[in-house]
Length: 115
Image (cartoon, rainbow, N blue to C red):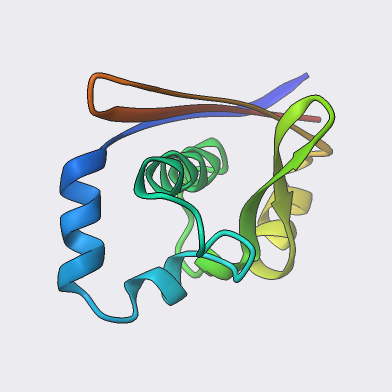
């Protein structure tokens, strides 16, 4: 059963400028394994994290470090712990589905939380 869906888009160039202008933003938004990626990949991962939050109803108090995008043999995966895992569990999410794409200067992500 679908518990929630979320989608987000990020302007890659604008996101890159924001990362340059705001010291510490990279460390605040991304886990160490994500921080070395190029701006396009970071924008897609940020869109995915936003989509996860939307799929959960965007509750207050979720920590950006408690959601990250990993990779396995099937592609990108949503990984959660702490605050995000607690909200997901309370809503009944047992599995995540994620699709990310980049085109025309935009990164996008679509997430489904399944129970």
